[in-house]
Image (cartoon, rainbow, N blue to C red; front, side, top):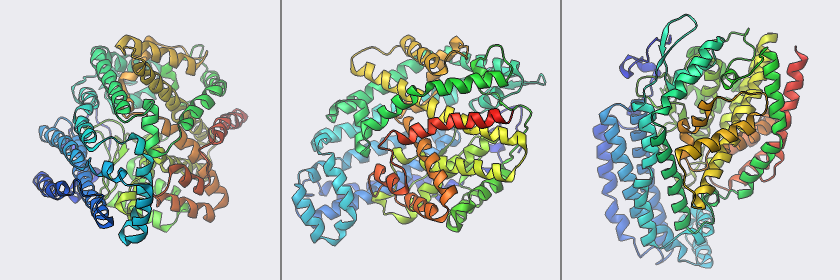
Length: 600
């Protein structure tokens, strides 16, 4: 599908390149009926209040009913989100998303009594009941995890209020999304042929990668200029989101927001702080790469907009979606026939929403629910980077698919800490495949640079984001105001530190925080960095060991949340409780630079 001069409307996208949400619900009326059916279960839920601790049978019934309700709720919420994300300007989709959020808050509030009542049982009683009641065996690990949260779970009344409060705290993120995806207007720039092109989120990266430096410069300043008029609204929204995280941490007796974000998933705070300290200790390696970029590009001054340009401009690579489909399947064939069959379903059963349209959510993600297909949202532009994005999101979806095929609902998802591992393993395997099947020297240089860029953008850049996120949360915890001005100054100073002496900063970059949706996700971004570090190690095992490593990896994909995340990765062959994997990934920069410089 050729990229038009204007962003197409949803109705103009060929149906085969859109996801098929009718496999979730045939239509919006069926979705509304699902809510009615869900709400019919609420009296049964209410009847359990005060009875969870009566005996092993009542505990089992509470856990089973909670799973039943949450499974239906997850599907309802996924459909609403994906309807909205397809076209945020559609009033019907907006209404569905708003109703979904209210339903989630109400149902979670109704279920809030269960966990406090479980925590009213002693560990000894729970162990005895698990041994006595066969149905509780499935919930052994989940009950152990609940008991671990004992200091942070409040009374049923407080948890009910906290659950209702989520209907308010989602507001800042929704404001950000509506403002940046729907209401924000971008100017037009002239491309390298002099044609007027209206910028969009999806087109920003495309034109920032133009070999024409004037196009890159104009795109950079025009795009960030669009945020100037809404900077105070976005600053207020981000500050509100951060304050909501602080309130949640204090309600649940956590010392810090960071602890509140990590401890529920059994992730030691040291994993986060080790990442920051290890990457920042290795920033001279990053600066060496940037100096190499500047030299190879023949620049007297390297600006931020030059970082997006291909370092090997003489290599042209076009990856239309149909070609990317076959290339990705070939690259991942080493993971075996079961993996390949699941990939084929993704392409042939319309799990993927491929192209950008007016009102569509920017970026890319893998979504769906336990009882649905693992859908993928893309904004595909036929670039090499888009092929990698496709590969990345398929990693998420395959992780979800194998987990849901293997695990019961209670363990049918994976923690955020593990979320980026499978996606980045896929990217590494794609790179290995291209290096093997495409022997052109110029493409080899491009792929070496791609690996360097992966480390720069996924480990170093995301760690920079993680540092910013930690800093602004710590400021809020200390009672310091978060204004647009100090958010911008903090961010600018951080960019200067991470970029080093060979990059000229424009004042526009101080507003980059205003366009990053992940800052509303409560300490999510660090997991991109830890995920790639783990993936580099796992992919090396797969490529060097073959089937034994593949077997360990497929078991990892099928494990969901059935054990602590750190332990699941350790069983797959990587110990993320130590700084070793991050340090090894940073040392890879030198290895790749040495290889690149040897080719020039």
